[in-house]
Length: 430
Image (tube, rainbow, N blue to C red; front, side):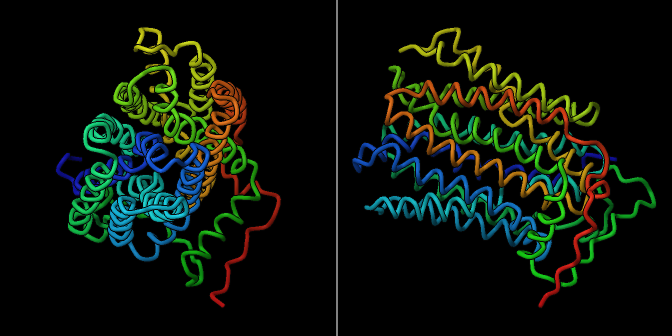
């Protein structure tokens, strides 16, 4: 095994693409208030566009996984990057709320959904046998790196030059990644005549599932039908619903406006959220390392429990200037922002098999982003009706504690074999 293995080049380009997608995803919290103020739209109205964005981002993921199985990773990722560039670029000429919903919600939601964490999970499963959990953690941490690299810069651009200038910069960024994806992304190790990283001599890839030649959309539905017969799927989906509710939906969208409510400048709130990304980079890579060694159920229970405690306490920590107690939240919350991903992917693989895991995780991830979308709208509604985000923090903290319990009782072994119903039949192409 060597660092010169082709798998690492594929992993590097995957990481860059995920970082670019994260720049789009994390930017909504910076743009929310300036867009709302310029057009006179309420936070609830703008948050609805975020709801569509996050929900579509999640719902696209299982179909994107099926598209990648059918048409290849490279083509799907390149198309998604172009769509992101169009969506962000065209926001600079919008004039109506419905246009924000179409651009932020549909264009960016669909494009980012094609490069969701499912993309990283598929690359890790196909290209790595050894270090798979660690690589999954690195890919998950790409979202943190996107925040770290871009949030303070985007906030400064919005403050100094306006949100339109920042939008155009993000559009150009997406286009710059397209050639990298077309040149270096390969679908499988066999395409370039190598074995996955860490595969022993004589290694044979898992036998591809026979789906009867049906299209990617119906493959995604078939995988959902199979998984939905199991308790493991619903527990994992419920936990990830709460994960999305408490990360992308609440903190990712409303942390910066909430900080501003308490007197912190836009750039200060963005910098704090970027530091969340710093600690998440450490926590998520560490989570991947731990996932290779310890029970994923226990890891998830600990992660959700710690996140719940941090959210229940954050309302006590706001101040007009950044005070030391706020760093308690930044560290504790940041360490498990997406640390939940490596153990969740591992449980999908354990319960549903390597070949099904990518699309099944896509559906679990869909629940994550539906939770995020509902939370983004809900928190905006709470802020409009009460003048405070405090109830939103408390509800999210309580949900995280429930998710900790659900994660601890995910069944062991092959969930499909244990399902009471017979194996779902292959769908006919007709």
